[in-house]
Image (tube, rainbow, N blue to C red; front, top):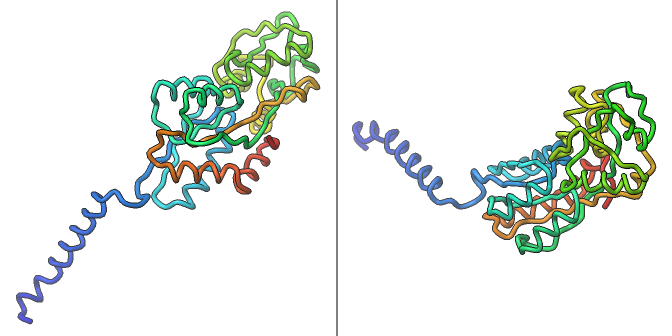
Length: 256
């Protein structure tokens, strides 16, 4: 081989590698650079972010992107055509809205349950000891709006306790309620047990017996219009499997 041809070899090799790389980018084969979009109830934020990290570790090139919010708002977005691959609701009522329009790819599966707890600023300065105490005059109480799962549960708690609350605001997600309490804008808020657990020293939790009969069951399902059907089902399987269940249990969720 002549010296000229030897000199050209490195350039030829680089050209071949570059063309091959371009071919890989254009092919669209495999899971490279795939984004899996998961719509999930706000109360699942911490746990699903952990589950999402596990999923990404098991699937090279896949990124899980979450949209957290009130289940009713998320369902409305999906009904209006928002692109997503998986939906996890904080109650069966909002999942029923989704399945009523055949937006699911299969049968929804229950994966966790949750109950309400009163959250107060650290030390419980208002001295709240029961659900009935939330009806005291001059107390700033925050709840979820009735259409949101935590709000629907709050209405049931009122009925069970024979108490009518006069909240200063009704929020669209349980995380918004918790934020009002942790910021000092509210004397108390009705959130989930898992929210109190997750907030740690930022709040004081006050359990109340009526909550034991008001349990929110969380279902999950892959969506019919998902562009990544296999990955969507794999994410659902991870939530239902040992890894997902361990993460949920650690956060305070109960079995469905």
